[in-house]
Amino acid sequence: DTAHVITHALARDTLSRLRDVETEQVGFRKGLVKLGRICGYEIIDGSMETEYVEIQTPLETTMGERVKGLDDVVIVNVLRAATPFVEGLLKAFPRAKQGVISAGRDEEAGMAEGEFPITIDYVKLPEIREQDTVIVADPMLATGSTMCAVLERVLENAPEPEHLFVLSAVSAPDGLIRVGEQFPEAELLTVSIDDRLDENGYIVPGLGDAGDRAFR
Ligand code: HSX
Image (cartoon, rainbow, N blue to C red; front, side, top):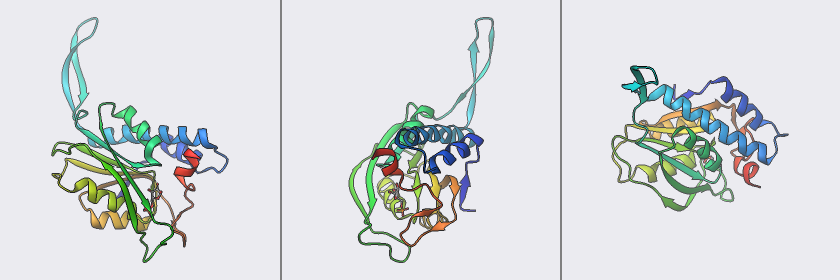
């Protein structure tokens, strides 16, 4: 198994609204924010440890728990569709550092052997340290070309982080396989593994173009 599917009922509900062609721009953007928050909570629940801490309630001293590592989180926003998704993630990881990468498929060049050439225009990343949980977020993982190019930039000159999550809302089997093969250290998280890619490299059934639906 290459990927872990986030199956929280609210994640499935929210993704279904995103898929719906009737969901207009505001609803779509809010849905992506909400899905980002749910995914963030799922990452915390599934992968982060808690420690016991003594706390004082208004009545007495008792044991409480605190999630460890919340200060060591780096979220990478793959412009532009990931922007609302990352806004949601930040609700789960309010103290995260953020990186930004503008990367996109060269659609005119077209898909060749299941891959697109990728243009990267802008990269600004915080320092990545061994103890960090790095979350690279992009709502769509289609051929995986964009994500592979992004991961290359994220990981160059960086030590292997504690966790490297590749988070998408919808993904295609081909893209997950490609990213998994090229970056075996990455933990692939998605809310849905869709059926296939069409001849233009779009995820089917998918949700259309997330960037266009959120921003146009
Ligand atoms: C869309 O295409 C998404 O937001 C991703 O950035 C990208 C995914 O396509 P692929 O590179 O996986 O084929 O703009």
